[in-house]
Amino acid sequence: MAFKKVWCALALGFLLPFSCAHTDFFTSIGHMTDLINTEKDLVVSLKDYIKAEESKLEQIKKWAEKLDQLTATATKDPEGFLGHPVNAFKLMKRLNTEWGELESLVLKDMSDGFISNMTIQRQFFPNDEDQTGAAKALLRLQDTYNLDTDTLSRGNLPGVKHKSFLTAEDCFELGKIAYTEADYYHTELWMEQALKQLDEGEVSSADKVYILDYLSYAVYQQGDLAKAMALTRRLLELDPEHQRANGNMKYFEYIMAKEKEANKSSTDSEEQEKETEVKKKDYLPERRKYEMLCRGEGLKMTPRRQKRLFCRYYDGNRNPRYILGPVKQEDEWDKPRIVRFLDIISDEEIETVKELAKPRLRRATISNPITGALETAHYRISKSAWLSGYESPVVSRINTRIQDLTGLDVSTAEELQVANYGVGGQYEPHFDFGRVSPALSSLFLLHKCCVSLFQVANYGVGGQYEPHFDFARKDEPDAFKELGTGNRIATWLFYMSDVSAGGATVFPEVGASVWPRKGTAVFWYNLFPSGEGDYSTRHAACPVLVGNKWVSNKWLHERGQEFRRPCTLSELE
Image (cartoon, rainbow, N blue to C red):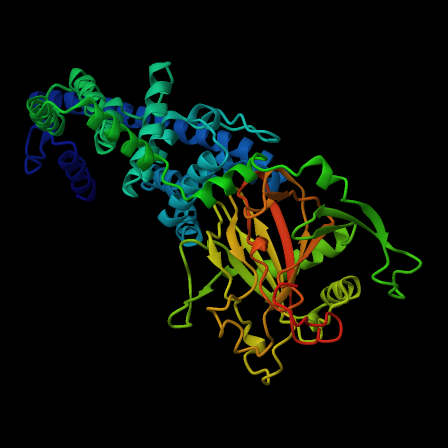
């Protein structure tokens, strides 16, 4: 009886052509012959199931083999691998999108162990925001370093260790992300690149119809009606019944007819083209200057000024620790004076600082100039942590070294701030109000002058820190009120890694570019001796094109410098 119930259930599952209520099959050869046909159908269905499973497993096997090779390469040199912006973007895309698709593919047939493990691990995967952020990083790199889509897609970047390329599907994904941001300029660039790669014969799941749909609309939004119509016609050749394309074509034809009736003058057309070009490249003069300096272009120091720059052995103005073993110092710029110290931090110290900071990294915040509250900002994409000198002799030793070589007091310094700029990390043009570390919120009110924090930052792919001041301006009288430590008098910046391409510290006001060199540090004053801010020190960190950039910096404040760097009576000094 139990056998009959099971067989009946199977029969229902495969839609047997007779009722399970009739079970006397042995009494009729006719019925038995029906069972033969049913069994044949079952075998065919079973073979189809096996074939489908084999096909599925073959896809999973190819995926596993591809990821096995990729992770084997990536784990040998994680920072070098992620130093390539394409690799960073594709990692975000894989973990946020493709692993989820794989999970859906195998969900019904994989073991409970894998599914439960997948469920647990997914909470630690990148999300849509991460994938979008990585995509935006590629777009920023493209703009800053004047990279065409083909160069970026093929991974032909300087200094790359692990060459990678973007598929047509990847290009389509970048175009879609730009589209959701109403960035039609980049939408056009990346949709055209996806289309180009498909036209060249690349096998991809990307659909030309979808690409042309996005592309035609992006082109239309930028005012090129004729090109939008041509792209829509191409779309309709592939899919004549495409509802939106047919509607758009009618609308485009209507607009075109109205323009012809209006008989616009050529002058108006030229103005429209100029407006479109401005819309594509809507940058402030400082922004253009900043990007040129990041590329190694722009203003250059004259030979006459260069002759005034020297390298020397420096003993910290006869500091006992450095009289017998002076450090190497060289001039980077004259006005403002920027000096670089060579071999000033060891590899062991660098690794200690990084390891202390990594577990504590959290999303960096800025102070709201109106409310004073700490909040995240779209123009500052990074994570940071704070370290105190008493936590590690290495941090304490670094603080002492800075004091010895600058001659400035660091006794009232804030904690060591460690910041990590991830993929597309940036800090757009702003004035630095000076974040206050929690440990110093209860400091007693001191005189106007003091020492500020020592900051460490890690710039990943696209990581940048756009033009800003390290000091508070006159219209920011309360910037450091909570500390009671006065304004930021000087900046000390360690470079804790070499960078294959990009990542310079640039000063747009004067045209200076300072390039990262591991183990070195640069130093400059933010204030004149009079206490007035030196606006020529406005600076920025360029996005890292290839590689990984770790930096750490110490902001020195006015408090405690009264006799070390006496004030002058004239604001002009």
